[in-house]
Image (tube, each protein chain N blue to C red):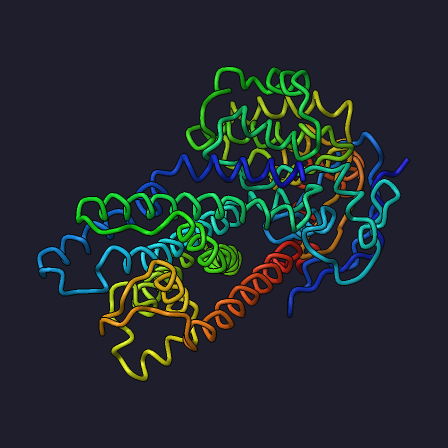
Length: 239
Length: 260
Protein backbone atom coordinates (compact mmCIF):
# COMPACT_ATOMS: atom_id res chain seq x y z
CA UNK A 1 0.00 0.00 0.00
CA UNK A 2 1.33 3.44 -0.96
CA UNK A 3 1.50 5.91 1.91
CA UNK A 4 2.83 8.77 -0.25
CA UNK A 5 1.83 9.43 -3.85
CA UNK A 6 3.45 12.28 -5.74
CA UNK A 7 2.11 13.16 -9.20
CA UNK A 8 3.78 15.58 -11.62
CA UNK A 9 5.02 17.92 -8.93
CA UNK A 10 6.80 21.08 -10.02
CA UNK A 11 8.38 23.80 -7.91
CA UNK A 12 9.68 26.99 -9.46
CA UNK A 13 11.80 29.56 -7.65
CA UNK A 14 11.68 32.68 -9.84
CA UNK A 15 13.90 31.59 -12.74
CA UNK A 16 14.97 28.21 -11.31
CA UNK A 17 13.05 24.94 -11.55
CA UNK A 18 13.72 23.20 -8.23
CA UNK A 19 11.41 20.27 -9.06
CA UNK A 20 10.47 19.36 -12.59
CA UNK A 21 7.49 17.03 -13.01
CA UNK A 22 8.44 14.62 -10.26
CA UNK A 23 6.19 11.57 -9.85
CA UNK A 24 6.81 8.75 -7.42
CA UNK A 25 5.13 6.70 -4.72
CA UNK A 26 6.40 5.38 -1.41
CA UNK A 27 5.09 2.23 0.25
CA UNK A 28 4.08 1.96 3.89
CA UNK A 29 6.94 0.72 6.08
CA UNK A 30 9.53 1.44 3.42
CA UNK A 31 12.88 3.11 4.04
CA UNK A 32 12.98 5.29 0.97
CA UNK A 33 16.05 7.23 -0.10
CA UNK A 34 16.21 10.51 -1.97
CA UNK A 35 19.64 10.77 -3.50
CA UNK A 36 21.19 13.64 -5.37
CA UNK A 37 24.02 16.14 -5.36
CA UNK A 38 23.56 19.54 -3.68
CA UNK A 39 20.72 21.49 -5.28
CA UNK A 40 19.11 18.37 -6.76
CA UNK A 41 15.74 19.14 -5.15
CA UNK A 42 15.73 16.65 -2.25
CA UNK A 43 15.18 19.17 0.53
CA UNK A 44 12.63 21.10 -1.54
CA UNK A 45 10.60 17.91 -2.01
CA UNK A 46 10.72 17.17 1.73
CA UNK A 47 9.69 20.73 2.56
CA UNK A 48 6.69 20.41 0.25
CA UNK A 49 5.72 17.07 1.79
CA UNK A 50 5.88 18.61 5.28
CA UNK A 51 3.85 21.69 4.31
CA UNK A 52 6.77 24.08 4.76
CA UNK A 53 6.78 25.23 1.13
CA UNK A 54 4.02 25.27 -1.48
CA UNK A 55 4.47 23.38 -4.73
CA UNK A 56 3.84 25.21 -8.00
CA UNK A 57 1.79 22.40 -9.55
CA UNK A 58 0.99 18.70 -9.27
CA UNK A 59 -0.75 16.64 -6.58
CA UNK A 60 0.49 14.94 -3.44
CA UNK A 61 -1.41 12.57 -1.17
CA UNK A 62 0.00 11.42 2.15
CA UNK A 63 -1.88 8.64 3.95
CA UNK A 64 -4.75 9.56 1.60
CA UNK A 65 -4.79 13.19 2.72
CA UNK A 66 -4.35 15.93 0.15
CA UNK A 67 -1.29 18.06 0.97
CA UNK A 68 -3.08 21.24 -0.19
CA UNK A 69 -6.36 20.76 1.63
CA UNK A 70 -5.59 18.54 4.60
CA UNK A 71 -2.13 19.60 5.73
CA UNK A 72 -3.26 19.82 9.38
CA UNK A 73 -4.18 16.12 9.36
CA UNK A 74 -0.88 15.29 7.68
CA UNK A 75 1.06 17.21 10.34
CA UNK A 76 -0.45 14.91 12.98
CA UNK A 77 1.18 11.82 11.43
CA UNK A 78 4.54 13.10 10.18
CA UNK A 79 7.70 14.39 11.77
CA UNK A 80 10.96 15.68 10.45
CA UNK A 81 14.55 15.78 11.53
CA UNK A 82 15.91 18.66 9.44
CA UNK A 83 19.39 19.00 8.00
CA UNK A 84 20.23 21.48 10.74
CA UNK A 85 20.19 20.08 14.29
CA UNK A 86 17.25 22.26 15.21
CA UNK A 87 16.82 21.78 18.94
CA UNK A 88 16.14 24.21 21.79
CA UNK A 89 19.72 25.03 22.75
CA UNK A 90 19.17 26.30 26.29
CA UNK A 91 16.95 23.36 27.23
CA UNK A 92 18.36 20.09 28.50
CA UNK A 93 18.03 16.90 26.47
CA UNK A 94 15.16 15.76 28.70
CA UNK A 95 13.40 19.13 28.47
CA UNK A 96 13.71 19.06 24.69
CA UNK A 97 12.09 15.63 24.53
CA UNK A 98 9.32 16.66 26.92
CA UNK A 99 8.68 19.90 25.03
CA UNK A 100 8.19 18.12 21.72
CA UNK A 101 6.18 15.32 23.34
CA UNK A 102 3.78 17.92 24.77
CA UNK A 103 3.15 19.38 21.32
CA UNK A 104 1.71 16.02 20.30
CA UNK A 105 -0.01 15.47 23.69
CA UNK A 106 2.22 12.45 24.04
CA UNK A 107 4.10 13.18 27.25
CA UNK A 108 4.17 9.61 28.43
CA UNK A 109 7.22 8.88 30.59
CA UNK A 110 7.54 5.37 29.15
CA UNK A 111 7.76 6.66 25.57
CA UNK A 112 10.42 9.18 26.56
CA UNK A 113 12.41 6.56 28.48
CA UNK A 114 12.21 4.16 25.54
CA UNK A 115 13.54 6.77 23.16
CA UNK A 116 16.27 7.81 25.58
CA UNK A 117 17.36 4.15 25.70
CA UNK A 118 17.24 3.59 21.94
CA UNK A 119 19.35 6.69 21.31
CA UNK A 120 21.68 6.16 24.29
CA UNK A 121 20.92 9.60 25.64
CA UNK A 122 20.98 8.64 29.32
CA UNK A 123 24.38 10.07 30.09
CA UNK A 124 23.53 13.49 28.62
CA UNK A 125 19.90 13.62 29.75
CA UNK A 126 20.36 16.65 32.00
CA UNK A 127 22.88 18.40 29.81
CA UNK A 128 21.87 21.51 27.85
CA UNK A 129 21.57 20.88 24.11
CA UNK A 130 24.06 23.61 23.22
CA UNK A 131 26.82 21.75 25.10
CA UNK A 132 26.31 18.46 23.22
CA UNK A 133 28.74 17.11 20.62
CA UNK A 134 27.64 17.00 16.97
CA UNK A 135 26.86 13.29 17.22
CA UNK A 136 24.69 13.66 20.30
CA UNK A 137 22.90 16.67 18.79
CA UNK A 138 22.01 14.61 15.70
CA UNK A 139 20.81 11.77 17.88
CA UNK A 140 18.70 14.16 19.92
CA UNK A 141 17.31 15.71 16.74
CA UNK A 142 16.15 12.32 15.44
CA UNK A 143 14.95 11.26 18.90
CA UNK A 144 12.79 14.39 19.01
CA UNK A 145 11.29 13.49 15.64
CA UNK A 146 10.28 10.10 17.01
CA UNK A 147 8.70 11.32 20.22
CA UNK A 148 5.44 12.00 18.36
CA UNK A 149 5.34 8.35 17.21
CA UNK A 150 4.95 9.43 13.58
CA UNK A 151 3.66 7.22 10.79
CA UNK A 152 6.11 8.89 8.44
CA UNK A 153 9.52 10.22 9.39
CA UNK A 154 11.57 12.53 7.19
CA UNK A 155 15.30 12.45 7.81
CA UNK A 156 17.02 15.22 5.89
CA UNK A 157 20.76 14.48 5.69
CA UNK A 158 20.75 12.79 9.11
CA UNK A 159 24.49 12.12 9.27
CA UNK A 160 25.75 15.34 7.72
CA UNK A 161 28.98 16.44 9.39
CA UNK A 162 29.32 13.36 11.59
CA UNK A 163 32.47 11.28 11.98
CA UNK A 164 32.48 7.70 10.77
CA UNK A 165 31.71 6.19 14.19
CA UNK A 166 28.81 8.48 14.95
CA UNK A 167 27.49 7.85 11.43
CA UNK A 168 27.60 4.06 11.85
CA UNK A 169 25.88 4.35 15.22
CA UNK A 170 23.07 6.40 13.67
CA UNK A 171 22.71 3.94 10.82
CA UNK A 172 22.11 1.16 13.35
CA UNK A 173 19.44 3.24 15.07
CA UNK A 174 17.73 4.06 11.76
CA UNK A 175 17.75 0.36 10.81
CA UNK A 176 16.02 -0.48 14.10
CA UNK A 177 13.33 2.17 13.46
CA UNK A 178 12.64 0.94 9.95
CA UNK A 179 10.51 -1.93 11.20
CA UNK A 180 7.75 0.30 12.53
CA UNK A 181 7.51 3.44 10.41
CA UNK A 182 7.93 4.74 6.89
CA UNK A 183 11.18 6.66 6.61
CA UNK A 184 12.11 9.05 3.84
CA UNK A 185 15.80 9.77 4.00
CA UNK A 186 17.75 12.27 1.95
CA UNK A 187 21.47 12.06 1.62
CA UNK A 188 24.28 12.77 -0.74
CA UNK A 189 26.33 9.97 0.85
CA UNK A 190 26.00 7.02 -1.53
CA UNK A 191 27.09 4.40 0.98
CA UNK A 192 24.44 5.63 3.40
CA UNK A 193 21.66 5.16 0.85
CA UNK A 194 23.13 1.81 -0.20
CA UNK A 195 23.29 0.56 3.37
CA UNK A 196 19.93 1.72 4.59
CA UNK A 197 17.33 2.10 1.87
CA UNK A 198 14.87 -0.39 0.43
CA UNK A 199 14.37 1.76 -2.64
CA UNK A 200 15.91 4.94 -3.87
CA UNK A 201 14.97 7.86 -6.12
CA UNK A 202 17.82 9.70 -7.84
CA UNK A 203 17.24 13.41 -8.41
CA UNK A 204 19.33 15.81 -10.45
CA UNK A 205 18.52 19.43 -11.25
CA UNK A 206 14.99 18.89 -9.99
CA UNK A 207 14.32 15.91 -12.26
CA UNK A 208 13.67 12.35 -11.15
CA UNK A 209 16.24 10.29 -13.05
CA UNK A 210 15.58 6.82 -11.73
CA UNK A 211 13.67 5.00 -9.04
CA UNK A 212 14.14 1.44 -7.83
CA UNK A 213 16.20 -0.79 -5.57
CA UNK A 214 19.98 -0.40 -5.55
CA UNK A 215 20.31 -3.65 -7.54
CA UNK A 216 17.76 -2.56 -10.13
CA UNK A 217 19.56 0.73 -10.67
CA UNK A 218 22.93 -1.02 -11.02
CA UNK A 219 21.50 -3.50 -13.54
CA UNK A 220 19.77 -0.82 -15.57
CA UNK A 221 23.03 1.02 -15.98
CA UNK A 222 25.19 -2.04 -16.47
CA UNK A 223 27.56 -1.11 -13.68
CA UNK A 224 29.26 -3.07 -10.93
CA UNK A 225 28.72 -0.59 -8.17
CA UNK A 226 26.11 1.95 -7.18
CA UNK A 227 28.47 4.92 -7.34
CA UNK A 228 29.17 4.28 -11.03
CA UNK A 229 25.45 4.04 -11.72
CA UNK A 230 24.78 7.28 -9.93
CA UNK A 231 27.56 9.14 -11.76
CA UNK A 232 26.47 7.73 -15.11
CA UNK A 233 22.88 8.84 -14.55
CA UNK A 234 23.73 12.34 -13.33
CA UNK A 235 26.29 12.95 -16.08
CA UNK A 236 23.86 11.80 -18.77
CA UNK A 237 21.28 14.23 -17.39
CA UNK A 238 23.78 17.10 -17.34
CA UNK A 239 24.82 16.60 -20.97
CA UNK B 1 -4.17 26.21 24.86
CA UNK B 2 -1.83 23.39 25.99
CA UNK B 3 0.44 24.07 23.04
CA UNK B 4 0.60 27.78 23.91
CA UNK B 5 1.52 27.02 27.53
CA UNK B 6 4.07 24.43 26.42
CA UNK B 7 5.70 26.86 23.98
CA UNK B 8 5.57 29.69 26.54
CA UNK B 9 7.37 27.50 29.10
CA UNK B 10 10.08 26.64 26.60
CA UNK B 11 10.52 30.30 25.64
CA UNK B 12 10.64 31.39 29.26
CA UNK B 13 13.34 28.82 30.07
CA UNK B 14 15.37 29.96 27.05
CA UNK B 15 15.09 33.60 28.15
CA UNK B 16 15.79 33.04 31.84
CA UNK B 17 18.88 30.97 31.00
CA UNK B 18 20.35 33.77 28.93
CA UNK B 19 22.38 36.20 31.09
CA UNK B 20 21.65 39.06 28.65
CA UNK B 21 18.10 39.30 29.96
CA UNK B 22 19.32 40.23 33.44
CA UNK B 23 21.72 42.84 32.10
CA UNK B 24 19.46 44.51 29.54
CA UNK B 25 15.93 43.99 30.79
CA UNK B 26 16.46 44.27 34.52
CA UNK B 27 19.89 45.77 35.26
CA UNK B 28 19.89 48.53 32.67
CA UNK B 29 16.63 50.29 33.72
CA UNK B 30 17.74 50.23 37.38
CA UNK B 31 21.16 51.63 36.45
CA UNK B 32 19.50 54.41 34.39
CA UNK B 33 17.23 55.28 37.29
CA UNK B 34 20.11 55.69 39.72
CA UNK B 35 22.29 57.48 37.15
CA UNK B 36 19.69 60.20 36.55
CA UNK B 37 18.96 60.44 40.25
CA UNK B 38 22.66 61.11 40.89
CA UNK B 39 22.86 63.64 38.03
CA UNK B 40 19.81 65.43 39.42
CA UNK B 41 21.25 65.43 42.91
CA UNK B 42 24.51 66.95 41.74
CA UNK B 43 22.66 69.60 39.72
CA UNK B 44 20.88 70.64 42.93
CA UNK B 45 17.54 69.32 41.70
CA UNK B 46 17.41 71.78 38.80
CA UNK B 47 16.42 69.13 36.24
CA UNK B 48 12.69 68.40 36.65
CA UNK B 49 12.83 65.64 33.99
CA UNK B 50 15.18 63.75 36.31
CA UNK B 51 12.86 63.93 39.30
CA UNK B 52 11.78 60.46 40.37
CA UNK B 53 8.08 60.96 39.54
CA UNK B 54 8.97 62.24 36.09
CA UNK B 55 11.58 59.57 35.47
CA UNK B 56 9.38 56.62 36.42
CA UNK B 57 7.06 56.59 33.33
CA UNK B 58 10.01 57.43 31.06
CA UNK B 59 12.12 54.55 32.27
CA UNK B 60 9.17 52.13 32.13
CA UNK B 61 8.53 53.06 28.48
CA UNK B 62 12.25 52.92 27.70
CA UNK B 63 12.66 49.52 29.36
CA UNK B 64 9.88 48.04 27.21
CA UNK B 65 12.11 48.50 24.17
CA UNK B 66 14.37 45.82 25.68
CA UNK B 67 11.39 43.44 25.62
CA UNK B 68 11.31 44.11 21.88
CA UNK B 69 15.04 43.39 21.64
CA UNK B 70 14.76 40.15 23.63
CA UNK B 71 11.87 38.83 21.56
CA UNK B 72 13.43 39.82 18.25
CA UNK B 73 16.64 37.98 19.19
CA UNK B 74 14.69 34.91 20.29
CA UNK B 75 12.44 34.71 17.22
CA UNK B 76 15.27 35.39 14.76
CA UNK B 77 17.50 32.78 16.44
CA UNK B 78 14.70 30.20 16.38
CA UNK B 79 14.29 30.98 12.71
CA UNK B 80 18.03 30.88 12.00
CA UNK B 81 18.59 27.52 13.72
CA UNK B 82 15.60 26.04 11.85
CA UNK B 83 13.97 25.31 15.21
CA UNK B 84 10.87 27.16 13.98
CA UNK B 85 10.85 25.31 10.64
CA UNK B 86 10.74 22.08 12.56
CA UNK B 87 7.85 23.32 14.67
CA UNK B 88 6.02 24.57 11.56
CA UNK B 89 5.73 20.94 10.43
CA UNK B 90 4.12 20.04 13.77
CA UNK B 91 0.40 20.50 14.58
CA UNK B 92 1.15 23.92 16.16
CA UNK B 93 -0.85 26.80 14.66
CA UNK B 94 0.41 30.35 14.10
CA UNK B 95 -1.53 31.65 17.12
CA UNK B 96 0.24 29.06 19.34
CA UNK B 97 3.58 30.55 18.30
CA UNK B 98 2.51 34.19 18.55
CA UNK B 99 0.85 33.77 21.94
CA UNK B 100 3.76 31.69 23.23
CA UNK B 101 6.22 34.46 22.36
CA UNK B 102 3.88 37.28 23.49
CA UNK B 103 3.35 35.78 26.94
CA UNK B 104 7.10 35.75 27.55
CA UNK B 105 7.25 39.41 26.51
CA UNK B 106 4.38 40.13 28.85
CA UNK B 107 6.17 38.36 31.70
CA UNK B 108 9.38 40.33 31.18
CA UNK B 109 7.47 43.60 30.72
CA UNK B 110 5.46 43.20 33.93
CA UNK B 111 8.62 42.23 35.80
CA UNK B 112 10.40 45.32 34.45
CA UNK B 113 7.48 47.55 35.45
CA UNK B 114 7.54 46.20 39.00
CA UNK B 115 11.31 46.60 39.24
CA UNK B 116 11.07 50.19 37.95
CA UNK B 117 8.33 50.97 40.50
CA UNK B 118 10.31 49.43 43.36
CA UNK B 119 13.46 51.31 42.28
CA UNK B 120 11.42 54.52 42.04
CA UNK B 121 10.05 53.89 45.52
CA UNK B 122 13.54 53.34 46.93
CA UNK B 123 14.82 56.55 45.31
CA UNK B 124 11.81 58.51 46.55
CA UNK B 125 12.50 57.23 50.08
CA UNK B 126 16.18 58.20 49.79
CA UNK B 127 15.31 61.67 48.49
CA UNK B 128 12.29 62.12 50.82
CA UNK B 129 9.80 62.65 47.99
CA UNK B 130 6.16 61.52 48.19
CA UNK B 131 5.74 58.51 45.92
CA UNK B 132 2.79 57.60 43.69
CA UNK B 133 -0.31 56.20 45.44
CA UNK B 134 -1.13 52.51 45.00
CA UNK B 135 -4.20 53.30 42.88
CA UNK B 136 -2.09 55.49 40.60
CA UNK B 137 0.56 52.78 40.35
CA UNK B 138 -2.12 50.40 39.06
CA UNK B 139 -3.34 53.09 36.68
CA UNK B 140 0.23 53.64 35.50
CA UNK B 141 0.66 49.91 34.75
CA UNK B 142 -2.60 49.89 32.78
CA UNK B 143 -1.71 53.09 30.93
CA UNK B 144 1.66 51.72 29.82
CA UNK B 145 0.19 48.38 28.78
CA UNK B 146 -0.45 49.37 25.11
CA UNK B 147 3.19 50.42 24.80
CA UNK B 148 4.28 47.04 26.16
CA UNK B 149 2.03 45.26 23.65
CA UNK B 150 3.44 47.42 20.82
CA UNK B 151 6.99 46.47 21.80
CA UNK B 152 6.13 42.78 22.12
CA UNK B 153 4.68 42.62 18.62
CA UNK B 154 7.42 44.78 17.12
CA UNK B 155 9.91 42.30 18.61
CA UNK B 156 8.08 39.39 16.97
CA UNK B 157 7.85 41.33 13.70
CA UNK B 158 11.56 42.22 13.56
CA UNK B 159 12.58 38.70 14.60
CA UNK B 160 10.42 37.27 11.83
CA UNK B 161 11.59 39.63 9.11
CA UNK B 162 15.26 40.03 9.96
CA UNK B 163 18.13 37.62 10.64
CA UNK B 164 19.58 37.08 14.11
CA UNK B 165 22.43 39.39 13.13
CA UNK B 166 20.39 42.33 11.80
CA UNK B 167 17.38 42.17 14.18
CA UNK B 168 19.34 43.47 17.22
CA UNK B 169 20.68 46.35 15.09
CA UNK B 170 17.18 47.39 14.01
CA UNK B 171 16.00 47.13 17.61
CA UNK B 172 18.84 49.31 18.88
CA UNK B 173 17.54 52.06 16.57
CA UNK B 174 14.14 51.71 18.22
CA UNK B 175 15.70 51.69 21.68
CA UNK B 176 17.43 54.99 20.89
CA UNK B 177 14.17 56.39 19.46
CA UNK B 178 12.28 55.38 22.60
CA UNK B 179 14.83 57.22 24.75
CA UNK B 180 15.14 60.36 22.62
CA UNK B 181 11.65 60.78 21.15
CA UNK B 182 9.93 59.66 24.34
CA UNK B 183 11.34 62.55 26.30
CA UNK B 184 12.43 60.11 28.98
CA UNK B 185 15.42 62.31 29.87
CA UNK B 186 14.94 65.27 27.57
CA UNK B 187 12.52 68.21 28.05
CA UNK B 188 10.70 67.73 24.75
CA UNK B 189 7.91 70.11 25.78
CA UNK B 190 10.39 73.00 25.41
CA UNK B 191 11.40 72.03 21.87
CA UNK B 192 8.63 73.59 19.74
CA UNK B 193 7.88 71.78 16.49
CA UNK B 194 10.04 68.81 17.52
CA UNK B 195 7.55 68.25 20.33
CA UNK B 196 4.69 68.35 17.78
CA UNK B 197 6.50 65.74 15.69
CA UNK B 198 6.95 63.48 18.75
CA UNK B 199 3.19 63.45 19.33
CA UNK B 200 2.79 61.35 16.18
CA UNK B 201 4.92 58.53 17.61
CA UNK B 202 3.85 56.38 20.55
CA UNK B 203 6.84 57.04 22.87
CA UNK B 204 6.24 60.63 23.92
CA UNK B 205 2.45 60.28 24.46
CA UNK B 206 3.04 57.16 26.61
CA UNK B 207 5.54 58.98 28.80
CA UNK B 208 3.28 62.05 28.86
CA UNK B 209 0.23 60.08 30.05
CA UNK B 210 2.41 58.29 32.60
CA UNK B 211 3.55 61.65 33.98
CA UNK B 212 -0.06 62.80 34.35
CA UNK B 213 -0.66 59.74 36.51
CA UNK B 214 2.48 60.25 38.61
CA UNK B 215 1.52 63.93 39.18
CA UNK B 216 4.85 65.23 37.93
CA UNK B 217 5.72 68.63 36.48
CA UNK B 218 7.44 69.41 33.19
CA UNK B 219 10.63 71.37 32.54
CA UNK B 220 8.61 74.62 32.54
CA UNK B 221 7.33 73.84 36.03
CA UNK B 222 3.78 73.15 34.80
CA UNK B 223 1.98 70.07 36.12
CA UNK B 224 1.11 67.49 33.47
CA UNK B 225 -2.65 67.29 32.91
CA UNK B 226 -5.02 65.42 30.62
CA UNK B 227 -5.01 67.88 27.70
CA UNK B 228 -5.06 67.68 23.89
CA UNK B 229 -1.59 66.13 23.81
CA UNK B 230 -2.78 63.26 26.01
CA UNK B 231 -6.05 62.64 24.15
CA UNK B 232 -4.31 62.76 20.74
CA UNK B 233 -1.61 60.55 22.23
CA UNK B 234 -4.15 57.88 23.12
CA UNK B 235 -5.11 57.66 19.44
CA UNK B 236 -1.46 57.49 18.34
CA UNK B 237 -0.62 54.79 20.88
CA UNK B 238 -3.69 52.72 19.92
CA UNK B 239 -2.91 52.98 16.20
CA UNK B 240 0.70 51.88 16.70
CA UNK B 241 -0.41 48.99 18.91
CA UNK B 242 -2.99 47.74 16.40
CA UNK B 243 -0.56 48.16 13.46
CA UNK B 244 2.22 46.26 15.24
CA UNK B 245 -0.15 43.37 16.09
CA UNK B 246 -1.41 43.06 12.52
CA UNK B 247 2.03 43.38 10.93
CA UNK B 248 3.56 40.78 13.27
CA UNK B 249 0.74 38.27 12.65
CA UNK B 250 0.89 38.86 8.89
CA UNK B 251 4.69 38.48 8.74
CA UNK B 252 4.69 35.38 10.95
CA UNK B 253 1.96 33.64 8.95
CA UNK B 254 3.84 34.41 5.75
CA UNK B 255 7.04 33.00 7.24
CA UNK B 256 5.33 29.72 8.19
CA UNK B 257 4.91 28.71 4.54
CA UNK B 258 7.68 30.35 2.56
CA UNK B 259 10.23 29.46 -0.07
CA UNK B 260 13.13 30.29 2.27
